[in-house]
Image (cartoon, rainbow, N blue to C red; front, top):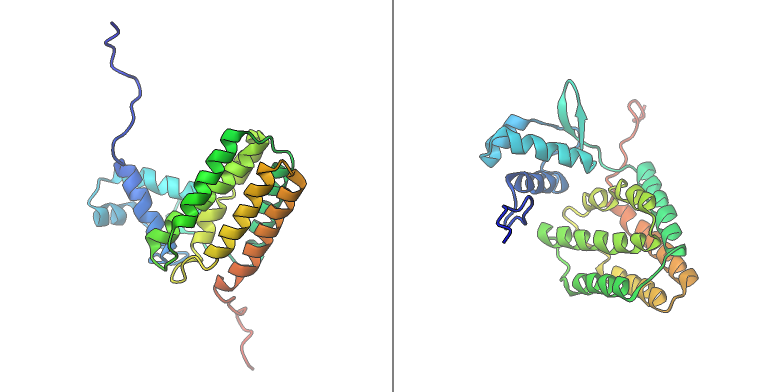
Length: 235
């Protein structure tokens, strides 16, 4: 009988790094930390009653998510919110990647079951302005779209999509507003799933494009107002 201790094992509870990561993400998404604000390891460790080691690792993960900017001399600072320009650029890249993925998809029954299960979980959520709700919605929405992207079987495309960090960037716009397009997402996701189930990839591609364009139109008013250039005030 092999009595070796397993090399890897499932964790039964979140690690300190996970806890710190979630706390930092929530503080940024909820805008408790303003854009540009310096975030120090010592202060976060003090606030969370943790040692600096898990906090440092968590901050590096949040930087990898695109919510913090790390510099050699100044440590970590909160990344700027999306502007009108970067907002449209982000949506343009998402549209490019997702429509390409769906157009080259190979869909199995298992894929459809997984995507439909994620859709059902999203549909069951009750919209609210509570952070835990829209954070959960955003995580499920990210899972839904990642599952769709992975249908292409192209790991490079999936990596490019993951590296957009689209959903965590957009989640910062929901603060105080909640998910304003829950019902739209329900209807548009169903159209995508139905087209994939029927094997109509052209229709599915159009449904994805329409869904992304609709979200881009619906969410744009959540962007903070653009600040006028210095010196552009009334003379």
